[in-house]
Length: 113
Image 1: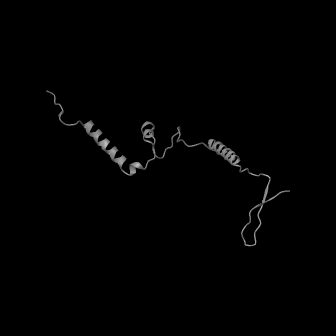
Image 2: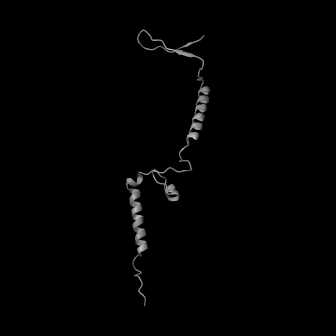
């Protein structure tokens, strides 16, 4: 009769899987395991690591061109907000500051000519 493993103990594969699971749980619960800001789904599906940025999705880095466009849009939005609140920037006015007798600056006066 051929020799058969003892059926009353776990196999090598199950022992290795059990040890790997224990290692993984210990890493998650330790402080070093929590240092990474990578999402669990990204790590599992895409192999993401702390030093790597995703190439797609909401957390990907913004290109320089896209950054310039966003800055323009934010500037326009800020101007619209200021106009809505009544704070309109005067483009033609020249700001002249005069020193008061006490050494403090007075409010800026507009030179209209």
